Amino acid sequence: MSDFPRWKYALVVIVLLVGIVYALPNVFPPQPAVQVSGNRGAAVDASLKSKVEGLLATAKVPAVAVDVNEKDGRLLARFGNADQQAKASDALRVGLGDNYTVALNLASTVPSWLRSINANSMPLGLDLQGGVHFLMEVDQNAMIDAQETRYTDDIRSLLHDKGVQYDSVTRNARGQGVNIVLRTDAERQKAAGLIGSDYPDLLVNDAAAAGNGFALNAVVKPTKLRELSQSVITQNVTTLRQRVNQLGVSEPLIQQQGANQIIVDLAGVQDTAEAKKIIGAVASLQYRAGLYTPQQAMEAARSGSVPPDAKLYFGRDHQPYLLSKKVIASGDELVTATSGRDQQNGTPNVSVTLNAAGARKMQEFTNDNVGKPMAVLYITRTLETKMVDGKEVKTPKITEEVINYANISGPFGKQFQTNGLPSDAEAAELALLLRGGSFAVPVDIVSESVIGPSLGADNIDKGFKAVMLGLGLVLLAAAIYYKLFGLVADVALFFNLVLLVAVMSAIGVTLTMPGIAGIVLTLGMAIDANVLICERIREELRNGSSPLASIRTGYDKAWATILDANVTHLLAALGLMTMGSGPIKGFGVTLFIGILTSMFTSVTVTHAITALIHGGRKLKTLSV
Image 1 (cartoon, rainbow, N blue to C red):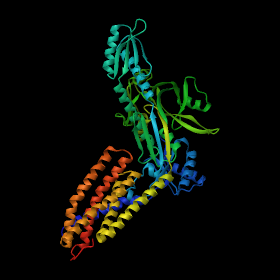
Image 2 (image 1 turned 90 degrees about the horizontal axis):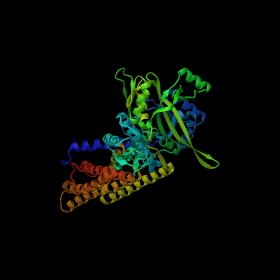
Image 3 (image 1 turned 135 degrees about the vertical axis):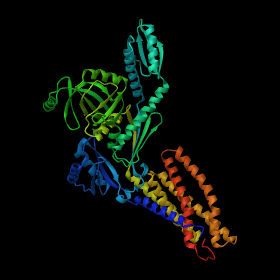
Image 4 (image 1 turned 90 degrees about the vertical axis):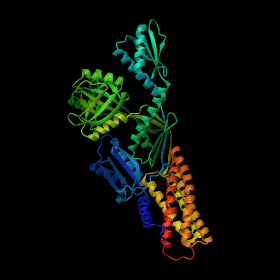
């Protein structure tokens, strides 16, 4: 048939072959696995692999394979079934201790040659794969407390630096701002001007004061509080994402809900306690002065005799340190931290920026302690749940670790660098801890729920049966009613499913139950285009046209109608994609991709097959 050029044949063949390759990974089911990742510098290498293999042999849990990825700092042990996976997880968690995070996972079994061209199976959503759901609530009162305390310190520093004489700068009750008592009315007017100029987010008004004082009241503006509330939630979401990465969860859902809540959905996570330990841990940072010599610290660690003005801590390499009990500055006074390299000696470093209050305290300390050591202490607090006398008892577990210990090279305040880090990776990790290790304000897990893997497997089985049943009925009806043209439409429908799965896999669309519904709906809609084409061809035959002319005219006349109908569906799917969220968005994405692939297969692919069958033949009639 001359109306179907060779370049279109080539296009169809290329698209279908690429579709088959990128849909192929989905026939390889994931394998139960246990993932081990190091905590704050713990090595993941060949020695860890040997240790893991030894622990598994002791526990009599055979592993299909144990692979180490030193680049990503992860070890993955694969198992034949979920029971072996659970036993291995328990054995490794006990055997490896707190230096490593052990988490359940599902390992890909897609061949390496497919993964080398970025052909991976579709990630499954929480409703299909199982996992955990957390609802977390941000402590808004803590946010207000932190801000008003910070403004109190900042105003005190401002008045001190500008030489304004004042009697007191104190914080009022929560939400009532800061009270400033000055000695004269002139000082009050000067202070009001300075505060209003430096802190435009504060409402400054005259207030009543006891005695002969002249008072001001500075209250945080409601608009600023709303901005801060949104800011701390955004920062907490970022911190949660960084922590979830330690679990190795694919496609986690972490998003804000309402004004002060955060939803965390972790598909594939079957160990709720481990997930809670990671995402719910409260971490903080402290800068403290280093005291005494390394030999005295080692002696204190050996004998247990610690000087009264110091406290004994350990680094990640178990090196003992004696630090001052007084905190210079803490993590909630840190604005940001970035890793890089020192411009003078080229060694990895971390640049830190403190807020005004933290900068003032750091400046005062470093002015008096040049050449002396200062340490960065990383503190984590987790809740361990135990059953005592049949009751659930939650006990806080606090871990304190020195992550950096170095001499002060010169006075500094707001901005400074931590030099002498052994590698860029170490510098990047320290910056990450400083920047994202702490929640902006505390968050509490207010509810949690678990979707078991059996329910996910049941959903997958039912969803697969629904797709096969819908596809089978459509194929059978088309073949019976439209004969040869119906069979051609069936072939195109099959490739429509292949292309749809291929596109969703290639761009990483997470498959959920609504997504499966979108696939079934797309298959049903796809055959409509072929119904239109077949009916047009029948109409042309009834009007006396030749078979080849009927095919050509049938496709031409049906195309306009098919395009109109699918454009409206595309607009509806686009609305679901852009305005919807979660399952609604997943349904819209599946529908949008399905409509595009169905337009290609229903028109172009069927036309190519029809032209291949009938081209160059003398036909008296058509099987339609």
